[in-house]
Length: 153
Image (cartoon, rainbow, N blue to C red; front, side):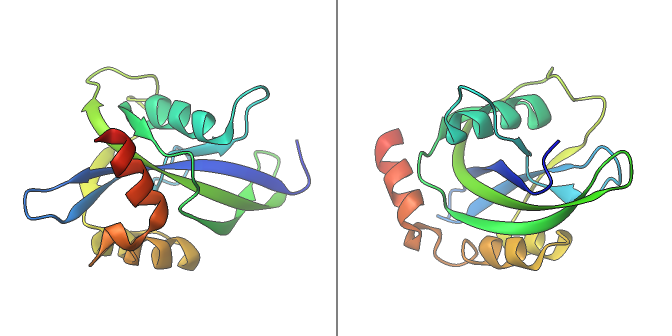
């Protein structure tokens, strides 16, 4: 296991009828706090593809993932042996098209849609809260989201 870590995360999103956006969060397996689907980079996989796999495994979310990182945040990862590894997480936006009823970690996590503002209040990492708040009023100001939305059509 690395001494410092680069991780990837998916930011699963859906657009509401009023033009606002909702964010899909999941609970962590260990503490039950609200997080985004995330994990370590995967050998042989592009980072956005690894984030897409995490979204499927942890949240049962399928859709279109952006290739451009929407932002980053840092947090201290506590390992099973008690070591703390400083991690930097690159976040990739994902437009959710389907939520599976049956997915790999469904018995270990809870998933729920939140407004970006409500999600920001529930996360522990200030940088992640700040990133979520950028989606609160005008989500399409994020160039990575505009690019993704054009690709989705």
